[in-house]
Amino acid sequence: MMDVDWIGATLHAARPQALAALTRAFRDLDLAEEALQEASLRALKTWPRNGPPRDAAAWLIMVGRNAAIDAVRRKRREAPLPDEEVLSERDDAEAALAEELDESHYRDDILRLLFVCCHPDLPATQQIALALRIVSGLSVGEIARAFLVSEAAMEQRITRAKRRVASANVPFEAPSPPERAARVATVAATLYLLFNEGYAASGGEAHVRHGLCDEAIRLARLLLRLFPTEPEIMGLTALMLLQHSRAAARLDADGDIVLLDDQDRSRWDRRLIDEGLALLDKAMRHRAPGPYQIQAAIAALHARAARPQETDWAQIEILYGVLERLTPSPVVSLNRAVATWKLRGAEAALAVIGPLEADLAGYFYFFGLKGALLDALGRTGEARTAFDRAIALAHSPAEAAHIRRQLDRLAAAPAKTVATP
Image 1 (cartoon, helix red, strand yellow):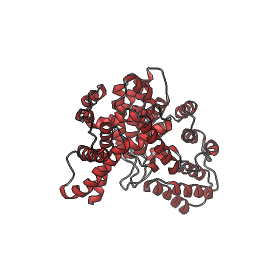
Image 2: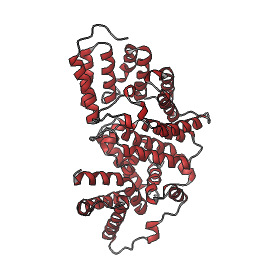
Image 3: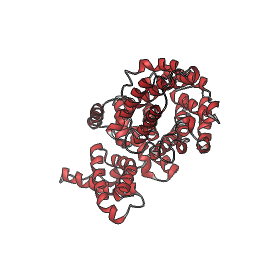
């Protein structure tokens, strides 16, 4: 691996912990970002010569902290700095719990900062967008694709959120237990979007970003320690575990996508599956179903099927119907269409997705599914058009390559004359 590659990967992995710690130390999002940028520039100069430090995040925090102090001195000139205790204060109940959980104190500043970004003074969409940008380090483009909006619109949303945080003098210490309870739903939504970005990357060369999935699961487990009786947090953690259990089977040796029905299920991680199923069972005993529990139940039906033919698609379709009522979304309806296809054929599924096209005109998976349905019905020309559109919307080389294989197969196969039921 070239120097620039390993440095970039190391900086990206360490960014969330470093930025969270710097933000809590200096209570200023812009100052923390500038300090981290300065530390990253110094890393680019020194790491190629000296090699990466043993703990990259701690190194960035130390260098960034010094850079921030220098910046504060330049701005205030003669004004005294805050006391060292103020800059370094880490004495709250949540910090003690975080230290007990994984003995890397600064790492769990991330969860603390998530709660700060989810302050009720901000609109919900701004809370999540700010948290994904500041805490998780996702690019504006990645966040925009998660929200199905333009990059320009998302840039404005994040900028407004940062200004609002600054003008409202939002406190950067850990919120009280009642405040955490009021914000937990938004924090959970942020973690799920972070996990999804790792599960199917919306940009870059890698289709799967395992580090983001692992970090989202780690934070979800920590969140569950803070809210041990909250069934939706159990459901969220179970959902992530069940989805991530398939990681080793989702790409082949060449990095190409392997669809669910074609995956080698012996490569699924039974440890994660067992943990996820146990959490889901515990959540369901509360008899307070929510969106994460329902999605986890769908994932559980896949996990429990030893072979693709044993998948309970009827139950999956019912669960997606419930999810549509709880959280109406064209993406949920698109997923329900897959179950409809398995149960009642491609024509019925095509009827389900037809009304969704206006809302999902920029969504890769819509056109991938539409192409597959049209192909199954023998409508090859229309299938090619849909697949071409999917390639144009692909977020990773693996997605584009998967669709190109479908086009190559259509080009090589004789035209169908009978629709497949």
